[in-house]
Length: 89
Image 1 (spheres, rainbow, N blue to C red):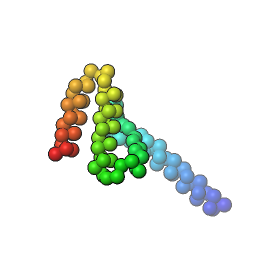
Image 2 (cartoon, one colour; image 1 turned 135 degrees about the vertical axis):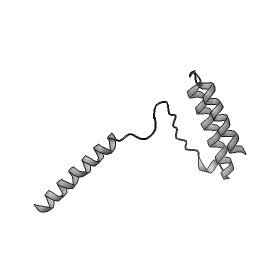
Image 3 (tube, rainbow, N blue to C red; image 1 turned 90 degrees about the vertical axis):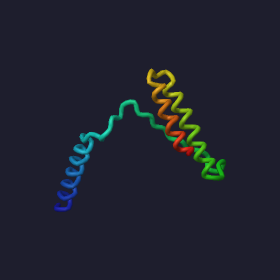
Image 4 (cartoon, rainbow, N blue to C red; image 1 turned 135 degrees about the horizontal axis):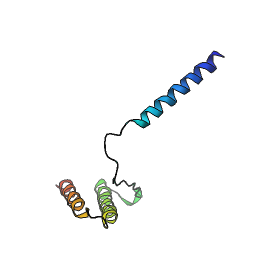
């Protein structure tokens, strides 16, 4: 009986913690955020440089496609170009 009460109380406290955690602001604005997941075939890329190039090319392709109809595309494109230039340097 005591073990049941302990487990039940622990579960209730955990649920309260999860509810409170869900109510806390993330600390950033998640509106208009682009995320993507890439899974290249590892056997196709022999060096890290080839794999890095794959990620850069694919992320730039997805970026361009997602912002093509957006009025802020020019501003976003300039930001991507700055990041790409820094990565190449």
